[in-house]
Image (cartoon, rainbow, N blue to C red; front, side, top):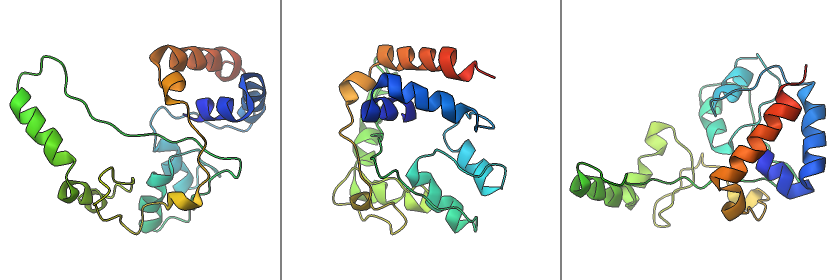
Length: 166
């Protein structure tokens, strides 16, 4: 997500030049989304590139962190769910899917300390959910950067040109 966002903001060549320069200041790359934020919360890092919706949980736990979005704009994800083709219990899978999209189901997220913006527009938005009206979102090209082939291409390039560097 971060690489695709940088590429969309400034072009691929400039984005990779930036990532190579940034690499010198990175103590570790996490393969788990919230791990770098947890490390920052515990003082192991100064900055974390994380999803904004993970920050409120850390703040509520008493950690001195704050979510800040880039003034140039930021990418974002749209969470999804799917029913696996050939599911053994298709009827119940459909019932769960239908329930998960309801207002009451989506309002359970905050109780589980999940602070994403609900997909159901009738669901109450918890006060800890980041206010996206205050975040400059880019016009994210989900068709291109959501494709498996483009994701693989960018990650392979990052592995070769950035991650492999000392």
